Length: 407
Image (cartoon, rainbow, N blue to C red; front, side):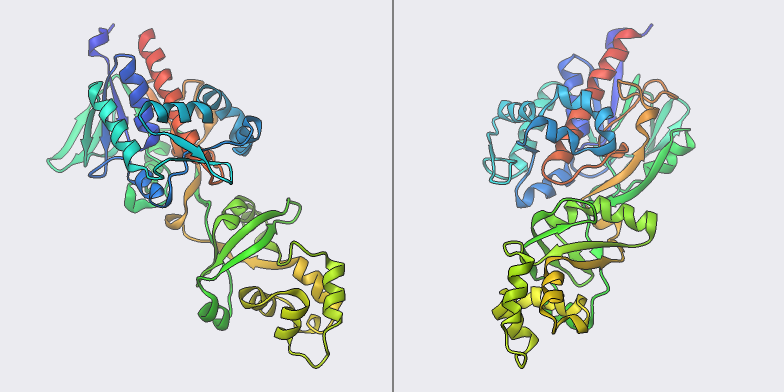
């Protein structure tokens, strides 16, 4: 049996999941080396924090854990052990106070990711965690790991390995999904990686594309057929639609496209007014008035909202007050396809959760653990992604420590 001092852990990936696992393991006295492909760790974490780092969400916990859909039961033990409140307490322990925004999202007081990452790295360095950058994992060589480095290829044979390689979104920051075929070749089942929290292509007319690309569509609700109406805003882009409301229903739109070949976002352009009130107000407009004037005076719609009606409402509905009112309250916006995975905020798919035991260890390869976004789960934006990455990283770190103690 190896001595405790000879047991080493390789953490491959320096994002939040890998860093959290390294923190847990180093606190337990384990010898940990982080291997990071990029010149510095946490690059996606830092970019996400440029517009305000949303680290978690303050909604009631039972609602929070339900955000992970079909994967909720698998992730629940890790989330129970590292709740949103625990994450906030952890950040406070690093000297970073947090606050709850009006939407329930939780942010650091300074809004940025860099102070938190700097304090986190200092803690890991103090505990003896070694960080090797520009080390690109290229696969297994029996029990060893292969890395491409600036000095050439090396092989490392740790006692335990944790893969925390992320999904396939924002590949310029280090996560490109290239690990998927390597793991499949080793016998681990991997579901195809797909874009999540993403925009969608729309077949805009030239007029819509040229005049309204970049325009926010504010004070609307959106829904997918059969789903609840969600208030907020989204943005018209040259390619289609982007923004928080689109991301909130992205999984449903993507899955509908895959299953049926079609999908549409249903818009309510005047959520504060009833269909009957709109029909009455539109009917009062002079028949000689232009469509733009009737919309502006009768429905209070102009600009990009009026353009959406021109783009999507059939011509024969525009003179019929009742039919136009119905269209304003339920305007179907067909989408063609998700934007490319490289543009997505996160990814769906990944290593099948049933292929791991309750320690996040691969059942078919003892000593190999996996965590974070490379696992087959997805969640909306709002702090859910980061919380689950850190919670599964922590759970995997504890699982490694348990496994090493049994050897």
